[in-house]
Image (tube, rainbow, N blue to C red):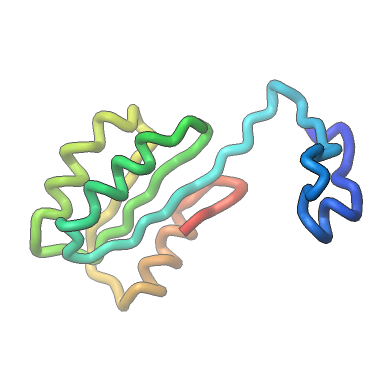
Length: 116
């Protein structure tokens, strides 16, 4: 629960003072969703997955939306899936392009904030 609000200056200009006048109840954890869209991405998907695994914040869900890749992309995703302890969800199916894949990721996400 937000106890205080962000001052107008911070909202308009960012927290240039180095101190943000917003305190959040310690028990509140805001879930956010990370969405990766890919197609035949065996050369890059492993680096992307490792980047997510190395994050210190753990209040996330991770969606990979694959466009029915014909290379090793799906096998790489499956290899790393257990390391996410249930936070990684993925689908591999034909889509109508990158924006369709992004929309699928948004539709599946349950986070308060979604990053693509």
